[in-house]
Image (cartoon, rainbow, N blue to C red; front, side, top):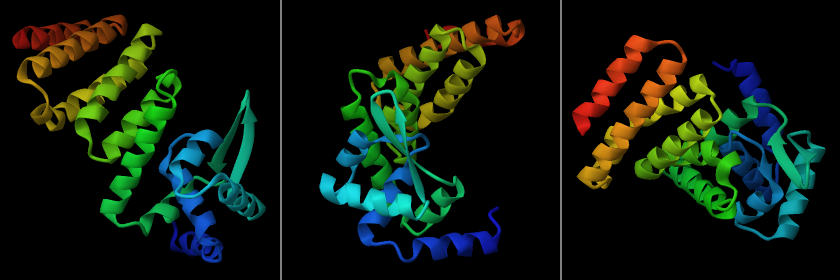
Length: 212
């Protein structure tokens, strides 16, 4: 847990912020990875001029940092612990809607090159309680890792998808739900086999066969 003294110190730093700067900081805090300016512009409820003014205020207060990466300007919080303080005052339902909105912005803005963002999109929809979309993106993330022979990483996302599947299933057609879950168990088997965990790999195949 964050020490109470640190929490209060961070709150004191945030208290004088103008509304636009606070809104921008909260939007950045929603994401677990740096946001590029184009995505941020689409996620904020005000125009680019106000966004840049708010960004300058946050940089001047050393609350966010802006970095160049290739052709993109990326924005992130200067301290990870700011994230908790920025988001804790937001009511649960509003926070859910904010995660949904950011997930939709990321999904739409990067739809033709989603590979770098698919894990973040999955997480945003999971936080938003949109389980079918989170489930689909977790499966996609898992396969992305497996295709690169990243067996441990792929297995982590497969297991997350399997745990989430019961929450997604009510919104799926029965045949689709069984087929997708069987594919996950087969993917789990492949990952385990490549990790030398052969007994578990066989058990995963049997789980897939039971759904056939």
